[in-house]
Amino acid sequence: MSQPASAPANVSDAVKCDLAGEVLRSFGTLRFAATGWSMLPTIFPGDILMVERIDEDQVNLGDVILASRDGWFCAHRVVAKSEDCGPSWLTQGDAMAIPDRPVKPSEVLGRVAYVTRRGKRIALPAKLSVIESLIASLVRRSFFAARVLIYLHKVYLYKIDPNEYLASAVHTSKESITPCQG
Image 1 (cartoon, helix red, strand yellow):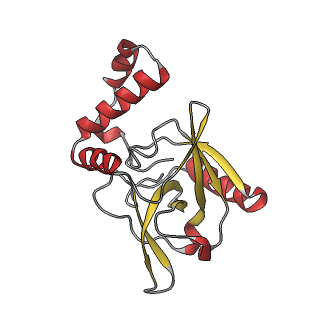
Image 2 (cartoon, rainbow, N blue to C red):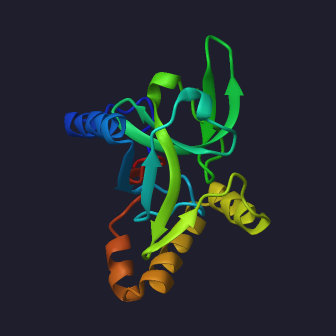
């Protein structure tokens, strides 16, 4: 998932993005762990994303695509197609209030085929359920709600010690969390 366009990516992040693109072009698939919160409740930090190479004519509304932007990854849902100034797609994180800038075909690395969480393969729906939409709407409006959701996810799904998580969470501020980083 990617850093806002105003923030420059460091060299190692740019190299990782280039390498991931090369892996997808050469082998057709790429697995990596999500780190951002922009796709809550569909994708949680720590989920393993399986990305498959696709051609630009295979991008559909509702797909979660992986794009390389300014040296960062961005895995967001396609919410609209545009033909202004050539083909492009508008993407938006499920937990984000506004769409990203248009994604050009050269920025698309692939489509997220599924997510692995706790060893289970989870298909990504093209559209959120009513409950997921409500959760996404809440997370969009409240950083605190996002933190609570992540906390509950880690405590109940991964059976971590709540006190250990709370101690580490105290050191994380809102400014240090990037909305779209993969």
